[in-house]
Length: 475
Image (cartoon, rainbow, N blue to C red; front, side, top):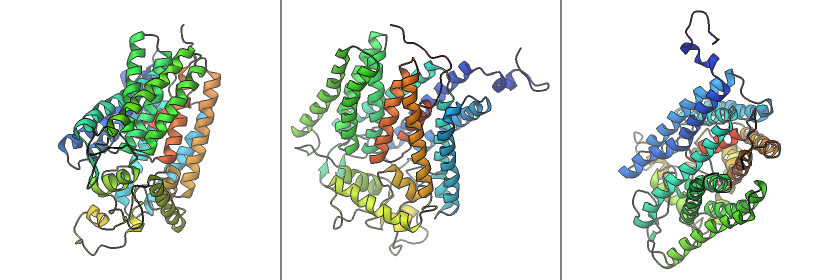
């Protein structure tokens, strides 16, 4: 008999009567929303060719609210494994520290909603926690496979959009990354080529898993086609993250073949990564893209000038007398060094969520008081709003203790992921193990953003879940 509270109806007590299988089915839909909605929403500003990236944040908010409800249900029903207590508590500590940071920040409103065009304030962190809890509460393997399919679909959506950007220079903001460099960089619906590379790094692993383990031939073919597409597009992110994703994909193709006990011929999937990537480089060197005649990386131009300064005025124009934008490693080194100085000035609470640029501002003389904050920020030459190392960014914006909590969270998640790979009869755990390791490594050379982070935290949560009835793949 269905459980009821007092004289209420069965429908009004759906939480009490919800089975683990029903919850997992609903959770899989919520996690699909986490993967896709931000990218789908970003189509609006890209088509309009205007700075309307608050629409993208609305996509995150919608999926976040859905998963907040699901996470609450998962907690009420006690679906979270006891072994996930450490990562859950570490994430909770990050939330509490973010609240403290917000209360002492430069701007409380930005702390809550995030900087215009970024959207990574306290609310975004709460949504990420909801994605993590929802995935960690899943008890059904089919829901986890749905999440893997969602990661592949997100990569495919962004890659198809990227093809238009690469070959036409339209529907994106990165045709030019300097006044005279037309490179038609791919950003997909991720708002930045570097953010796109971060998303595709996870999609490559998911597509490899589908190719290795899918029972249906059509499914395997589709995953192989997606793998080729992802590899080709990654070349046109012109980024260190993109290069890492390609290398990690090749290594994973070999390691996953062994881990899933697939036929050795499946190692040939590495060719589906290498050949399209080489083709992309050949196309660039042949002068078929923009005004380029040789392939190289453009991280500095992309992250500082084209994205942060030109697209959303989240920073000042780069000071080229101090930093050479053509030296990608030099740019990252400069950002890291300057961020360390910012951390040392306020190590306890940081600048406040999404407010790394504020302590760098030194003039408001050329703008009137009534103008938007972006007008003030953009005239402060040499300032920046993102450092591409998640530990440094967290320490700078939310305090050193928050970065420590993040480290504990990462270590705990990796530990549970590896244990899951060894413990479960299911091969699904192997995919999440590789994806979560990839995501954490990417965050060491990238930074949290509203397209990548919902996917990553869903994967991280799934790596911590415990299947009650392990599924043995049929052969």
